[in-house]
Image 1: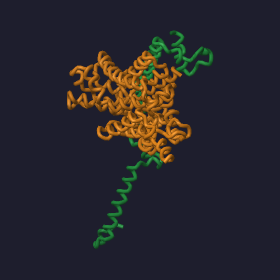
Image 2: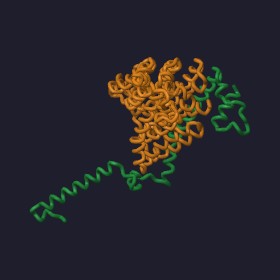
Image 3: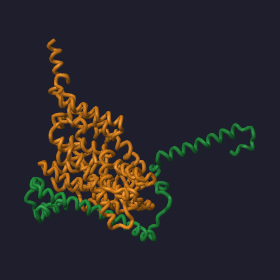
Image 4: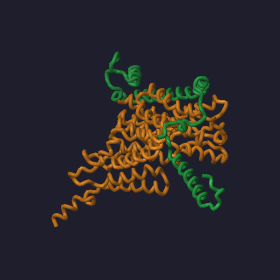
Length: 374
Length: 121
């Protein structure tokens, strides 16, 4: 009987806390949303399952959790804490990104820069709330709407907040279709939403091949902190555009990115243990993340309107909302909102330009914050 | 403020230990709103600066390539057609399989044909 009693005290039932229960329920909600609402399923399913695994109470003396030295999960989590997974995901993103629309209309690149105002204003807001500068920098990057970048910077600047920042970043990326449209409609008139843009020109193969190398050199010479993320992004794109390494590009954009996404999502989910995740800081991070996302969207839209003051060929300001780098979700939202006004207005290809510029912009912003704050 | 800007500049240039040794890291010092505002402003300016330069480069690229085309003409066929055999993609394999299947079917049909004129090989 005593043995049975001892065994009971080692089970999860005896040591389960309210926090663990809440986190397990959050994990189940993530999986439910991914399956029923199709919200970022490739990320929310691994994160949700990871959250469930990470919140099963561990028996004393057993090395099981991501924070226990030598545990299997700690080895998987090493890729997160050391910032290994995000650059590998960037390699895959580069191999699947077509920069043609951006190359055909270079002025739209600026919208990708304007949306980064969300990152820096949130950084300032987090400082105002009393976060340390390194923590504020990691929180601010949520506004870049780029999960791997947020994880990369958080792992470097604020490892203690990594779980909350990663969950916030991916949650808001999944909520792009909910968060962005009201802001876009609020800041634009019907006439502006009806603007039709000139179709993009055809971009030569040679332009596409030269671009990744040249853009990498320009970016990292000015902001060397972005060398890891942008190096992998443009390397992946070069694999795609060189046309002689199609097999490598194919692997990078399919098998490799899938493997890394599984490991990253699961490890991040498993790191959200109740005692480290359910804190007041996490709530503030979620609030700041939402604010950051909203500011980034507004920044892009307002900057497009500002550019229209000087341009003869007007930009549809909705396109500015795609400057947040949630690829391709925010571009799809632009298309959707545009077509609500004019079903024959196709903005998707135009929105892809600031969208991919936003990926570059958020990586540069991360590099700058990393350089300055460490 | 001037000191902070100088430190940020040196950090971005990867310096700080050479001719201008930094007294302290920027991080802990930036823990006030003024310094935070400066970091935010400079950061945003750098992002804009990089993307403006990229934008200008993209705008100039077609003209540069046009001038280069006299010495380095662009060929129409995709590079993968002339590249290493390893550059074969999955679709190439499918096309080869389809061609093989058609040839095999045609030879079978000719072999089974009672009319010798229908045989070509």
